[in-house]
Length: 96
Image 1: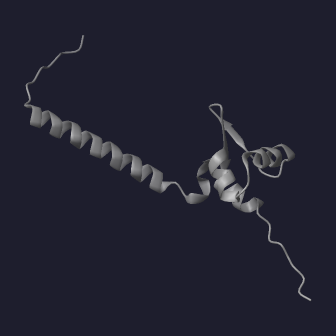
Image 2: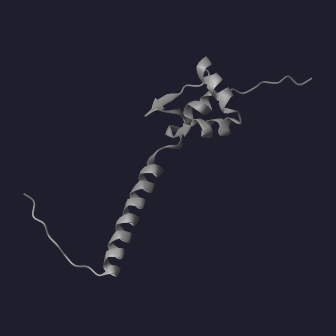
């Protein structure tokens, strides 16, 4: 059985301990997010549609036709930002 250790802290000390723990957790989260390269970021359907300046219906149609690859994680449809960038094609225009 584990030993139970009880200590007494003032309200200020407890608030300081909690504040410090929250700040450390936020710093760790920020460093993890910052370490992910932008090309590996996953976008939601809304973010992807906004980035491509299309409607969600059009995005769904493009996904069904295989123009854009989607991934389902935990019931959510996500898109890799790098694959969205690759799916864009340059239009060559003819100048007269």
